[in-house]
Length: 308
Image (spheres, rainbow, N blue to C red):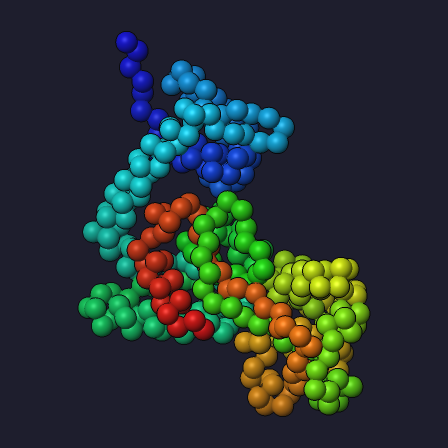
């Protein structure tokens, strides 16, 4: 009987990703290889095992019965491999020393600092060395890519939709707020219809911003068309708030992001008629639940407990 050489862990991870995603190209992106390399490696695995694992079509791939079984067994191997790596890292002190977190601007400015303070205090109470956290600040789309490419262990975004191919969990909701300068015509109104806001040129964040995507999705869902073209597109929430305060136009931003300006009277929040527009702050990471590191899980538990 021919002896089957054990496949490497990276190839097993590629198989599991292809079965889960239903796409070799998506699996290749997740695992950091080219589509051609992924396809060739999976073909080679099938030849070595003497089994057809994936049914290929222009729409993607579907696991055969053998492929489903092999992927299930591969997940057990990957979990054991991850436990081994985590254990070795713990023995060497790495797991407690560092964590790279990518966060959208709203989360990075208004939520993550409090979560990190609470995490540090919890670890010190337990007599453990505090985790050194490196924070990457980006918009929601960029956070997704940082996590997908392995540059970040954990990501936090605010969006009405979650990305494919990454594990996610909801952390807390965040409502959007319509804000204007104190001298704006809306400043004295008790509320404003969403249709009127949608037809008004706004100061907005760049493409890829979770805030902008949430607002555009809400407008499309409620009134059936896209909002008006913006009066200005700026790359940070702070720049948008300054432009609004200077009278350039209204904006729709995170309630967390505008709270201080509203409290100080620099901006006026005008309630929307009807139900508020909100999105979920969502955590994301590569792989499945078992791929979440111990310290990432600990930070997530802190974030959910504090809920902002």
